[in-house]
Every structure is written in C-alpha cells, then in structure tokens.
Image (cartoon, rainbow, N blue to C red; front, side, top):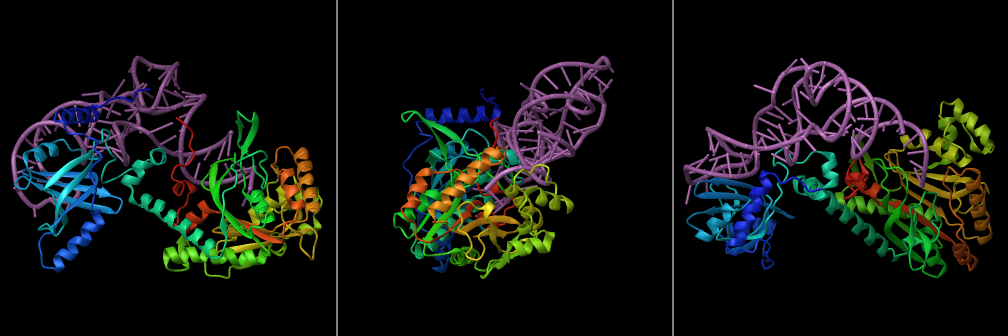
Length: 493
RNA sequence: GGGCCGGUAGCUCAGAGGUAGAGCAAAUGACUCUUAAUCAUUAGGUCGAGGGUUCGAAUCCCUCCCGGCUCACCA
C-alpha cells in the first residue's frame, strides 16, 4: 500500500530536488560535532566567566524542532540527545548560499552548525550561524510541537516519534540502561560470571509457560524459544562455575497486558553453596543498590504509593499468611475438591481452575498479592507448585522457595535449587503426568539432558529469576510494561 | 475471550441526522533578538473498513480491523 503523498511531503520532496540541483548532498557524512547542546551551554558559562561575549566557533548538530523567521533573522531550535539549543542566523553574518539553504529547511531536518556561542538580548543561549550544513533532509512532518504526540497507538508503533516528541520517553530508555548497568555491576562485584545460554532450545523447560515454536531447516527439527534460562545456568553450576548469571530475553506465548509482553527480560543467577535465605539477602541488596544509585534514596513513589526498598524486606510465611487472610490452611486441603470448595466458600471464582496448583495460585493472587505493596518476600511454597525447588528440611511437602512482590506485582522467584537427581526426575515425571491430566494448564517439562547433568552432581545452590521490565516499571514509576519496553508487541496493521 | 471507552487534516482536538471545523504544522507575503513569535492570505479530508436505515449518515443500526482500560486467562 503506497502511502498517500500529501502536500507537505510534496513540498519537501521539491526542496530535496532543489538541493540536488544546487549540488548540495542532502545526506552527507562529513560533519563532526565538537559540542553537543549541553557542551554549548557549558562553553557559554566559561566564556562569560572570562567576560567574553562570544566563544570560539564550535560545531554542533541536531534535529530542527522549530523555525522562527523574523525577516532578515531566523531562529532555529535544534534538539540532540543532550538537549536543545537555539541557532540564530542573521543576514549580515551568513553568505548567500546559507541564506538559500535556510529557505529549504523544514522542521525535522538534521543540520550541523558552525559558529560561536553567545547569549541573545532575551538571555537565551544561542549558537550564531556562521555556516550551516544540511545533514539529513526529512520528508515527513513531525508531531506538533506544543501538544506533542499523544495517540498511544502511534507512540508504540512509531516509537521514534515518541522519543522525539516526548522527552520523558527518551529518559526512560536511558534510565533503563542505567538500571541494567547497575544490576550488572552489582552482580559482577559479587563475583558472578555473566554468560549467554541458548535461546533456541529443544525442550522449553525450566518454567511453566506456553512456548513459541520454530523450526531449524538444516537440523530438520522443531525448536522452541526459551521460556527460562534456569536449566542451562544450573548446568553451568554442575560444570563448576560457582556464581553465574544471565541477563536475557525470555519468550512466553501467552496473553498481553500491562504487566506482560511476549518477550521480556530477566536476570537469573545461581550461586553454589547458597540457599534461599542467602538469595533473599542478595535480592534485597540488589534492589536497594540499584534504587539508591539511580534515585539517591531508598524511598521512591510508585503511583499512589511510596515504596521503601531499604533492606531487610518483610518476610511473610505463605501458609501462615493464607490462614490469616483466607482462613484456608492448604495443608488440610491436599484434596483438590476440598480446596476448591473452601475457596468457593470465601467467594473466589474457581470455575476456570483445574489443578490443585492452579487453585493455590489463584488463592495467593486473590488474597495475598494485592496487599503486598512494600517490597515483601512470600516464603515457603507447597511442593506441588514448585518442581525445581528443594524440599524443606522440616516438612517434605514444602519447598525452600520465595517470591518477591512489590506494588502487588511479582518481581522475582527464587529457591534453594533441587539437586537430588532422583527427586528431580520424579518431579518432572509428575509434571508430565499432570500435563496429561490437565492439558489446558501449562506445566514444566522433563528435560532429560538436564537430568543427566544433575546426575553428575550439582553442589547445593541458591537461584533467583528477576523480571527486569517490572523492576524498571517500579523504579521509573511507570504503570505499563509497554512504557519500559521500547517496542512492545502489537498486532500488525 | 467478555464488558466499557476510543479511531475525524501530518499532530492535538471539536462536531452526535442537514454544505467537514479550529489550533499547531504546511504554502505565499511582511518583519534583524524571537522562543507556543506575530500579522495577512491560501491550501489541506476514503471522518478506521465494509454493509444497512434514511430524501440526506462522521453522527443511527450491523459486521469487521486497530488501540486503551478492565475482568477472565496466564507467571
């Protein structure tokens, strides 16, 4: 489908033609800025401290966001990554070629300027145009300068426009980078080794999720996009890398909403000789480190709430908490129907839940999660919900597992890793059985290759998976995962 | 998947049966310190798509597409 060529585009294409006729390359490569817009402001400060009116000539560049023609003077605003500065071209400081070029400028064009920095009578820091160079002609108009770009669909589909028109969006991209940087630094300072494990996997194991399926021609086999990094990282532990982590993309073929994108980023780490208590400390320190380094405080706003990340976080026993909040003790409800009835009796809609683990999950989401606003660890989960976690020493029906919740959102999942290969095999086999029994619900999958690894001996290990996108949402006070994933998944038009 | 809300000029929005509107952006002109510049003039539309009702539909009805919120599902 050819986009309609309207008058604005016509006019710009005409200007492009004129540039070519004049022998001016509209897309040259030979301009190197010496000063970005921020450097220009700093240079002006220095210049004024020396009691000078103008600096030496500098080279600066950016995208034109406004043109104000005042007869024989023209003001041009340019925007670069660092910010914004105004250019002033006056007829008596520029040659005819530059005058002609200015006639061909449009909002959206990239230009380079050479000239001194000074301050106008209205006190505006300004680069005087001694010479101007077209760096890239734009032929489509930008969103309007004052109201900007608001249409959410356009913001997501054409994020580059969002980045130009809404400065906050660019800051989210940069702050997300800072968060990941601090995260990586924190892990490396603890001595963790960063690795990459396969994204294309023969068995989508290590979690409970519906996978994306794909196909490799040369191998003539189906492959899946990973739903977790867990099992490969544990193979690393088996191999003797004692502290290991991976920051990477996971793919889950499930619903999309403000907390879920089909591809999302996690940090998973595994540490030999650690248990889930050690991991808990690591996680709260990690969040605290990142929040403090970004915001200079442990207390930050999220929506209506003020979140305090200062360790230690609240630790809540799952079973006790469920008894308090719902009156249900799951240890007395090992029968699926009994649990279902009890949940139904307290007003929970259980029509769509099939398995015991599915019911428990619903019970936790309904009765516990919404109240977990301040960073909190829910501790000790039923065995049936956690096929990869080690049994508690005191109770074989409970595993050493915790999940971290903030603002009602799950942000991490961790356990003392199951390293008993016999028990692990049984748990996988049980998952496979449950899959047959409840084909509608997702289960973990038996990964024989991983079991063989475990059979060679994995040291006692503590592991965790942290959702980076949700972490960024919380720290940057964003209500939707689509605001922190630059290109969220949308239906194609 | 259900419910609610939305899609009108490049952008932001009005219009709710009777000639398709405004601001910004664009074009032309005036103006050598403006910064949402100002002033004058001009141009710009498959009103998300398709069907229906009507003398007449952006507007009412039906189907579909896209998005947002929410519930369900999912971790």
